Image 1 (cartoon, rainbow, N blue to C red):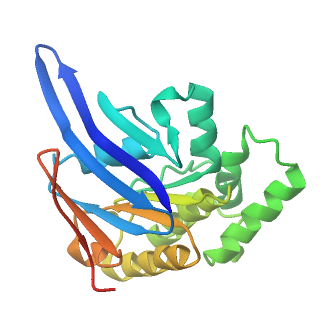
Image 2 (tube, rainbow, N blue to C red):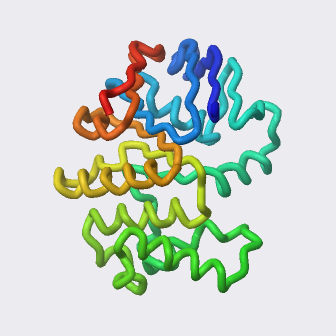
Length: 228
């Protein structure tokens, strides 16, 4: 079933008297349950595309349907609700607050939620158990290894039970062994039914996906299924 449909998506950035075209007409669909890797060199538009389909940014022109809804017609509140309830983000920079404990960081997405305090804690602890960090709930994030920090970030992305996981260079700050441990876990999430969209420039990381879309100069260069 189709989840994301992009038609002639363009994104321009105006810098003084110069206009930079990050995306120059992207046509793409992603079905529910897919695991798609978006690849390309620096400046290819892959992160811009991720931000648009993650409802973090708006295209300059073109049509974007998310679960059958035209995103351009949604209010800021509607978009915020979608980001909070349907989408989980995993970033290279982790974006955790060092002064908070692991548990407190994972609870952050509930800030504007109507979920009860009891259920919030239950869901946060369940997410931390899923990523193997039950013993670290009271630790501050500056007491964790890089892999543990990224696992905390993943637990935070899962706590609202999102149907879509967006991972933007999720292993960029990790060593090779830890990178593959994180990708094994993301692959498991996909096998459980989550749609996963991954941005990476690393071939060995992209191989976890079932489909690889390659960008160059703001256009799709290739869109191929892997052998999985």
